[in-house]
Image (cartoon, rainbow, N blue to C red; front, side, top):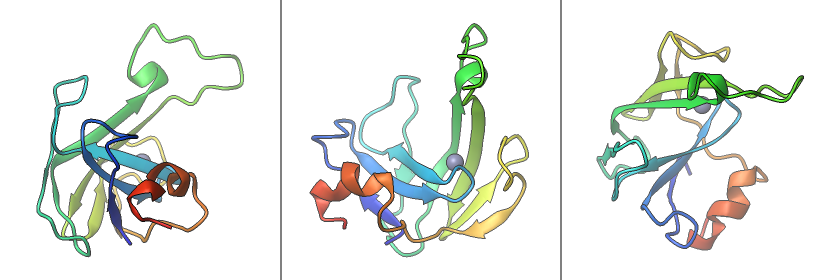
Length: 125
Ligand SMILES: [Zn+2]
């Protein structure tokens, strides 16, 4: 399973989750209500070869807030900026992880990952 609809109990804005092999974690994409930045995405409904638009530009820590002060030795700041098009993840060059600039197949969500506990209310296991 490459994308899973998020249960509104956990994700009231409605959307889909997928596994990101660049961050080695799950990401959520809002498709029904705008997020706190006013962004919302279109999903073509294809669960095997999904397309979301526009690009997803995730920023954390100092990349989201220049005044953010991470604890010494625990700076999780980063950028994950990508397109999901026809089942591929196309990473942009401004990502801070190792897959920046690369295109990879959107992987199945690994069993046992943290997303399983957050997302399983919708039937994912
Ligand atoms: Zn990522």
